[in-house]
Amino acid sequence: MYKVLLIEDHEAAREQLAEFIQKEGFEVLQAESGRVGLDLFLSERPHIVLTDMKMPDIDGIEVIRRIKQLSPDTDIILLTAFGETDIAITALREGALDYLKKPIDLNCLTTAIGRAKERFVMRQEQTLQPVILLVDDEELPRKRLARVLEKEDWKVITASDGEGAIRLFNITKIDIVLTDINMPRMNGLQALHQMRGINSDFEAIVFTGYGDEESAIQAMRDGAINFLKKPVDLDQLIVVIEKALEHLQLDRKLRYRNRELEIARQIITQITAEQGGIINIHESVVRQMMSYAKTLLDAIPMSILVMKKDLAIVYINKSFSHIIGNSSERLDEALLEQIRRLGIKEISLQQLTEMVNRLYETPGRIETIRSGEFSYLVLTLITIKVDASESYVLMAIRGERPDARERS
Image 1 (tube, helix red, strand yellow):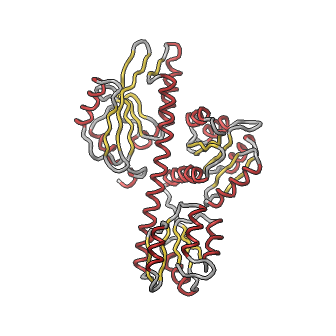
Image 2 (cartoon, rainbow, N blue to C red):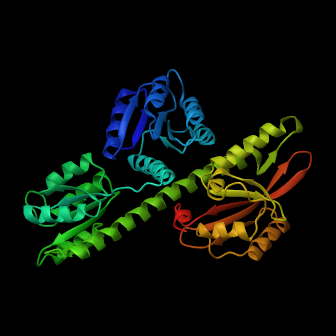
């Protein structure tokens, strides 16, 4: 089980958050102060850390700094008060993965810890075991279906009616709900409606008996992804569940990527607000400011490279270097092929060269190439000023999916 360290000095808030995170499928370690949190981190080595910003001994920014020194790959989420966006951006620059404003929106919390878990799983090259909630008031069919599903390496928990299903849903992170429609005390439609009110991060498939077509259609309107008639064809059931899991993972990945884009936009907005799009570096602090500028680029959760007009590479940020390494000296066909593997298919070296030239001819212009529903490439001109101004092209790459590299 994945461990989450929750550092929060307010006991009631900490207990409430811990309960929710446990329901999401994590083991939760609680700390009432930054210092206790750091001690727990050293002894327990959690996979994810959530830390409050304002605490009596060590604040959240210092917690982030110390944990990142000890374990650079650990993902940290900062909890801030409303209106502390500047502090949140500072946290992102220090290496935090995300931030959440109080009072905590639980859907945003689900997205944040989901992103962190996804990143850890990808680093460890692990696969997640989906959790299926099977709800049927007939015991023999329920047990038979559970045995079949468990052979697919899916974790299955069962309930005999809607009320029991709600109780299990409240304490367990569920990926797929398989439910009969007609059941005593609470039918499948009523149970699904209550589940959606608790957490909508799951897919539902309903079973219908003869003459239940109208109920099945209503279930689809309420968000069910499919329905199957009883007696259930087992091969068809496996295919339907696999499609539902694929749909759920795509939906989660889209939410995670959209959040990453929002964070990147906030960082870039602050950079341009501070310097008007120009990084002004005086001779006495050239090294410090260049390091600062690189830290800003590394904090952006997108693949970014900075290059000269002749396509010679000046800098590659961490998100991109994790994929291609640090060996590339210029944007050539070899590097372009690696970019294509990220999902940016509709692109050529000649096309990129023409775009770069247009940027130098028209400063302030933004060039964009869309390559898929979610993938695109954006180029813009930035100016770095030391003794004299020098312009470079900043290229941001959004691949189709974060695991495109492993699939290729």
